[in-house]
Image 1 (cartoon, rainbow, N blue to C red):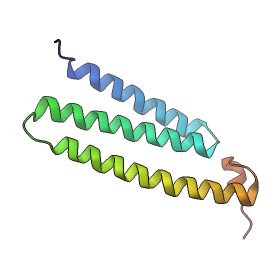
Image 2 (cartoon, helix red, strand yellow; image 1 turned 90 degrees about the vertical axis):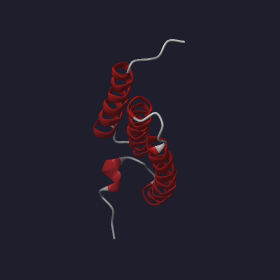
Image 3 (cartoon, rainbow, N blue to C red; image 1 turned 180 degrees about the vertical axis):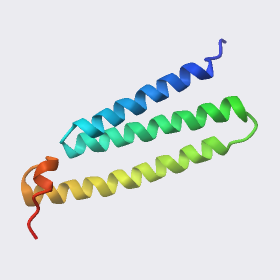
Image 4 (cartoon, rainbow, N blue to C red; image 1 turned 180 degrees about the horizontal axis):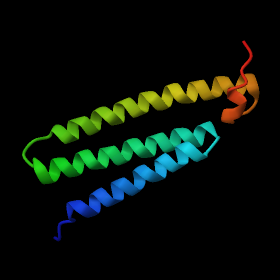
Length: 104
């Protein structure tokens, strides 16, 4: 079985990170922005696993960091979806520009 070089894995990870960054900075929909953040976190997970496999194959540090990031991402998604639902109930929109015009 042929092994994939580290440079190709890092290229895919970088590409995913910049797709997420582009989506975060160009979209106004809160759900799309949340998905972009999740894409960026997943690209970091790919980096952790790749570096763990190629630099320290006997240790599991990169995999533990990946599990920690997945846990944090799940909690972040739950809180963000709750905030989005509350904003939709109060403004009847999930557009970022509508959320900045909140009335207290």
